[in-house]
Image (tube, rainbow, N blue to C red; front, side, top):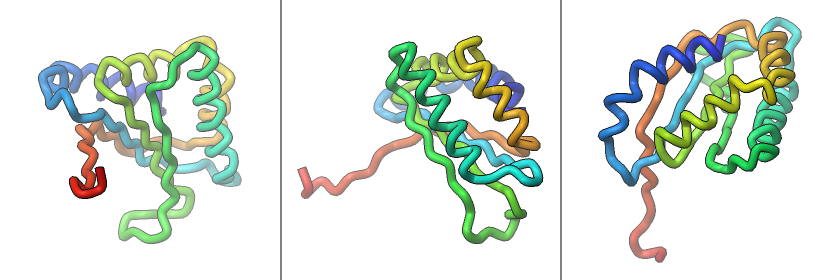
Length: 135
């Protein structure tokens, strides 16, 4: 379940990331699978509702994308990637706390009803690249 993955990876990587590049954002990615009969619209709505909970507690530092693969050698039906980006590790910690909060309980319950499991979780240092000539 995503909650278990969050806690495990978060705690194991926080120390090394605390000293990482200050200009980089922190990105998390979970490879998950929808339960049989669950739809992409359901997981999208879960994401929207999670962001609404964040907004209700005046948290704005988390960007969510959900990727639905068109092709991949290791992709099976129902696979999706839940990706979040925060400006730094401290703000990601706040997003995780909201995910696990009582305010987000209804969203978490729907997650459990919709998602069978997440087989992998990865935490990245994300660096934006831009064309220097377009300033």
